[in-house]
Picture 1 (cartoon, helix red, strand yellow):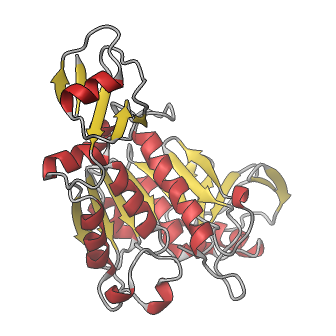
Picture 2 (cartoon, rainbow over the protein chains, first blue to last red):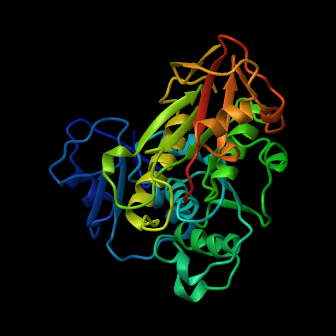
Picture 3 (tube, helix red, strand yellow):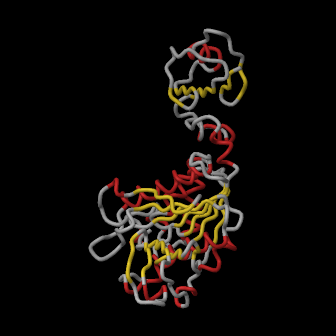
Length: 269
Length: 66
């Protein structure tokens, strides 16, 4: 059997992608096999997952859900869909992490911030000019809805303190620390180590300016607990926060969360 | 007396509090997570926990930006 647009289709030996297209959808011009673009000459194997699509055609909601993930490695989606990830702080790190996780199909996001979108945020945060003055929580939820309407989003619209963190994020599978304030970064890690055993944790420190790309790294602090950044480049006069380097760190964080959730780090879940 | 901080031996005054030690290093205690002899200290313990001869410290220091 083949899985074609999520439906089972009979497989026969020697079948090519061209045979399948002729049979199923002769107008299809976007062809994916096992998450990867493939040519018409591709010889199919039993069990292959195929997507056939016409460029520009508007999908139904159900088709959209499948198409969003059609380019992921098979088997990854089901596991991410069942996971809940908390994000503390929705600035340059948090807004990028949230969008990346939504695109990858994390099932549920718990998003915390107290602030509103300001013009000075737009140099690196994922908000739009027409969202200035909105709560970051609501503004980010609106963006995520446009990216992937299948992610369940819960908002925590308040200023977090150390004592809250273990209570508010109890039950998440992974927690991402995206605060701006270094005291809250320390508080977040302390709270997680004391009160959230078994929750994966990915913090960040040292991502300001336009320093070397590869100085940003992901360091394991404790089992299931990681820190991203160069650990020295703080935001300071003369060393601002810039979209690219903040984005590098944020995507380290997002990828680390996915690695942990998919069991790629040999961590005990 | 001697303590080991992030793998390095350091000579310090006997009975020094964790908070004073962090300040002496030129760091802001509020932005540092402290593991002392295998235990993560609460924020309140920084000002009350005295270092012992041979204490093993891991300091995780945070800088701002997000």
